[in-house]
Amino acid sequence: MARKHNSGPATLAVVEVAPVNITVDDRPVSARRGESVLTALRLAIGYVRSSDFSQQRRSGFCIMGACQDCWIWRTDGRRLRACTTRVEEGMQLMTTQEMLP
Image (cartoon, rainbow, N blue to C red; front, side, top):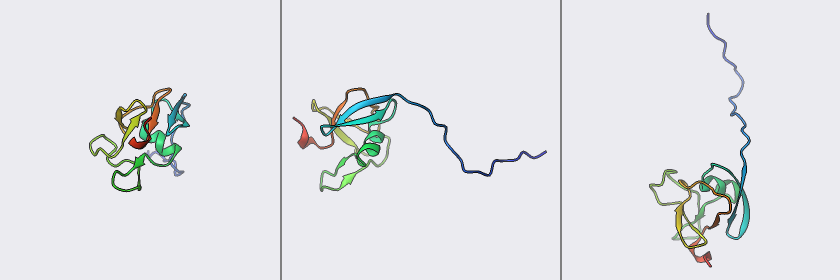
C-alpha cells in the first residue's frame, strides 16, 4: 500500500534558544546561543563588514573559513572569522579595523 505524503509546504521545527547579548560597532545586538557571528550580524545589521577595497558591504562568501571574506575584530584587536566563530555572551565586535579603540 502506498503512503500518502503531505502536499503542504515544508516547515522547520521552531526551537526556543536562549538569547545572547553582544555588541557590534558599539551597538547592542541580540543573538541566539549556538549561532555563528556571521548569522548574528546578517540578521541584526544585514552585513558582516565593508570591503577592504571599497565601502561595499560584504556578507560572507564560502561560509567555511577558507575565503577570508568575513574577518572582523574584537575590541581588544584580535581578528576572528565570523563564519566559523560562535557568539558568546558579552562579545564586543567591530566590523572595521578603523573602529578599534
